[in-house]
Length: 307
Ligand code: CP
Image (cartoon, rainbow, N blue to C red):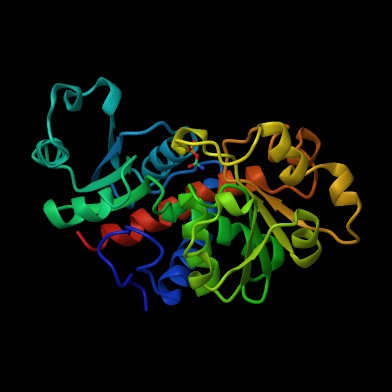
């Protein structure tokens, strides 16, 4: 099989394990490309891609733009803050106007869960979800699983704990779907007030004690507290949270094994992870960022075949 089972990338939930493996195999080739002196291929010279960001982003926005440019696509960037969305234009009208300028593919980040699925049904274009509210962040989960595969040889059979604000995290949901499809064992760890009620129906266990979770796992993926999505307080204070769920050298040293440490970014140093751990040899945080470009090149390349 050398094609994806889907026309869009809306979430990991709708991908098959074969789709994910295909993305990884194509990403392996693009990882070679981006590490050459000439980091570009002419593959998508005839394709134009619009990056629509209705929410802030550093990594995902730059990573998609670089991936597109490394594939030689033409790129236009749209930021909601400086657009006519502020004058009351609907999402569908905005996107249809952009598509009228002969754009072939849309990468969209939006604060509303389901925005990418909605758009895929309403406009005639390939849609890639770059994060939709608390729903999914599929390319983040792909690059995370790809980074585990790179570091540990395979994802299957590995024990991964996702720590932190699971309730508000699209990264957690997409990671759970991706890791389970690839045969990993997954636990989530954090205060029960930051766990969605349905979490165990996804086939993951909840562990509220960070030390026990770390003793169990091969990989710990540390998430930040998503203050921007919290309307009420879910724990007494940030200091309290850090004392129970912050990853420190002292805590890691108290465990008699090597654990791979991941973080999707942005990091809040001294809250969910200490600076010393974030910068340690166990952390693969910047490898994740590097792999993000190769993964996004693979996704764009494979979906360009559907235009
Ligand atoms: N990991 C991630 O999505 O980061 P940005 O919000 O900076 O894109």
